[in-house]
Structures are given as structure tokens and as C-alpha cells.
Length: 440
Image 1 (cartoon, rainbow, N blue to C red):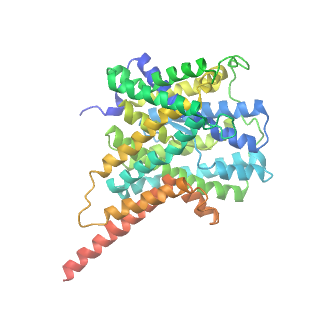
Image 2 (tube, rainbow, N blue to C red):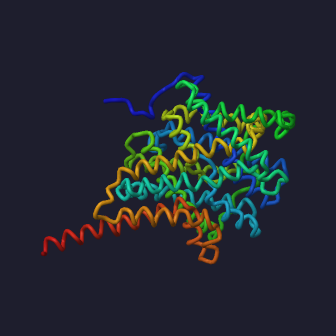
Image 3 (cartoon, rainbow, N blue to C red):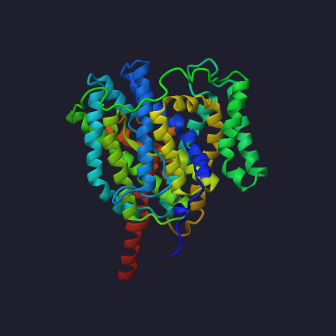
């Protein structure tokens, strides 16, 4: 029996370097939710820093569990975990409604435990994800991340005076150009480190141009272990739990899509048992996250793009990235160094990474049969629903909360629509046609 691609092992030095690429790719995304939620809660700078380091620590632990696995938990796939954006709006509403962070943490714990119980049920839906569905979802994952790359390229902060300046976008273009150059002229080793090398050089150009500096990295604690329940005991409010349970359903859907996507890119089998193990790891770490002052976890789509573009399919490389995240969570000084990488540099790399995810989905869709069936309509409609929240974020603002929760994420919207349309047009309709032909 041949070894699975994801079980490939590399020397420690290479694994560390490639793992660092994963950390740099997702760093901006992982610290944004705690900053948004903490700011809404009115926390001061030191408390915000606590939330950020907690997010790094918990996400590192979640990534290690997902990549390495223990019996019953973890997909053993190169899938990076991080604080999910899906629940940010709901958690901001809860934190500003008077309950503060304890109500948020209580809702996250309870809803994640509910998700842990129903994870095996989600694993049985694998048969509803043929290539026409998975290709569509993977494509939308890539497309839905492009606004993130654009915001990074413009500077990351819409309120900054340099937002969208030619200097910021030029730095992003320079980073993008270096990624392409390394892939064009480099050997195999350079190609695999192209993103990291481009980020390092882009950051050096930014330092030379006065767009970032590292003078503040030594200000603050060098070592700081994550606190336990630093904001008080969790408060379990029924309404808050119900709101977060809807978010958990979205997280389960998105992580299922991420598991299938990474399996397709790696070229390995992802069956119902593996999905169940991945979802249980997701929900377990989400349930434990509030104990360490953090929030729900889910698969990070941008890192799927990094696996696709580098061809490094090893789960041990991702585990190295998880170990770096744990270290960053315990050594705030290292976190401040990584945080000094300018947003435009991340944006330049993100254009290629996220575009690669979409291209992988298109490659899967190329294998689909479109003759004498409704597959083209399924793909077209699902992609359209996936793009609506991206091109018009306020589209569902006047709909009930549960509709906004499900369809405000382009990934979950495309996933739900693709699955339902595939069932209606390719399962139910096909059965009806067979029965009519037999009766005829």
C-alpha cells in the first residue's frame, strides 16, 4: 500500500520554513476577529493583546490536533485552523447587548458542544458532494477571499491616511511580482519557499520605504503564558446559545467544504469517517477555546491555497505551523515581529494564493459532465449565490437572522445551494426519469 501524500515527512528545517509560510499567510486573518470583538467590548490595549495571543495559542493547538490527530479527533490533513470570521457579527451583537465577553464565551462553549454531538451526522453528507458540488464550493472559496487580498493590498485599515495609496498597492504588486518571478526562474526548493521569500523581501522594501518598522517589537512582555478565564466565568444565556448554534452549523458546513477541498488538492480520500474526525476536532477546540479567552475555530481557506500553489501536501508541515502559532501565543515578542509584516505584502501574496484556490475548483469543474443534464445550471446558480455577499454585502440585511447567518458567508451559501440543486436536478430528477422510462 503506497503512502498517502499528506503523510510525507521533510527535514525539520524545511518543515519549519514551510510552516512559517502558513503562519504568515493566515496571521492577519487570525488576529482580526479578536481585535474586532475586543474593541466592541471596550477592552484596553493590554486586554486586546491578551485576546490576540490567546487566539494564536488556541489556533496552534487546534491546528496540531487537526493535522496530527488522536483517535476520533482530527482529519490528519494539512488543514490550518484559526478563529472564524463567521461568528464575528453575532459575537459583537452579544458583547454589546450588556452581557459582555462572559455571555459570548458561554454561548460558544454550549453551541460548540452541540456541534460536537451532531458532527457524525454531518459526516454522512459526503455523498452529496460530487465533483459538481465540490468544484463549485472550492471555486467560491477562492473568489470569496479575493476581497481580503484587495483590502490587504490597499493597506488593511480603511481609516488610515495611506489606505489605497499607490505606494501600498505598489508594494503589493512588488510582492506579487516576486512570487511570480521565483516560480518562473527558481528551482524546486525556491518555488516551494516563493511566498515566504517574497514576503521577506517585500517587508524589507517596506522598511526601506518607511512603511513599517520593528522598533516596537521589544516593547511589552517577551514571555506570557495564556490566562485561564481572564474575563470571568462563562454565562450561559439561552438566546445567545441559540444564536451561536446557527453559527456552529455554518462552521460545520464550511469546515466540511474545507476538508473536501484540501482532500481534492492533496489527492487523498476524504470519507465520512475522516470528515467526522475533522469536525469533532473543530468543535472540541471551539468548546475549549473560551477557557483560554478565545473564540470558535474553523478551517482557514487561505492556507488551502498555499498547499495548492506550493505543492507541499504534508500534514507535518502544517503541524510545524501549528507549533509556531503555539509559540507565538506564549512569546508575544515573536507575535509582534510577525505582526510587523505590512498588510500590502500579505495582499500581494494573497492574490496568488487565493486565486490558486479558485483555479483548483475550476480544474475540478472541468472534469464534470455537462451533457444532457442540469450541471451547468447547478454550477452557475451556486456560484452566483456565493458571490452575492461579496459584491453586495448588505443584500440580506433585511432578512431574518437565520437567513443572514447562513447566506452572509459566500462559502456556506454556495455550499447549501449547490448541494440542494444537485439533489433536486441530479438525484430526484434522475430517479423520476428512470421510473418514467420503466413505466413507459
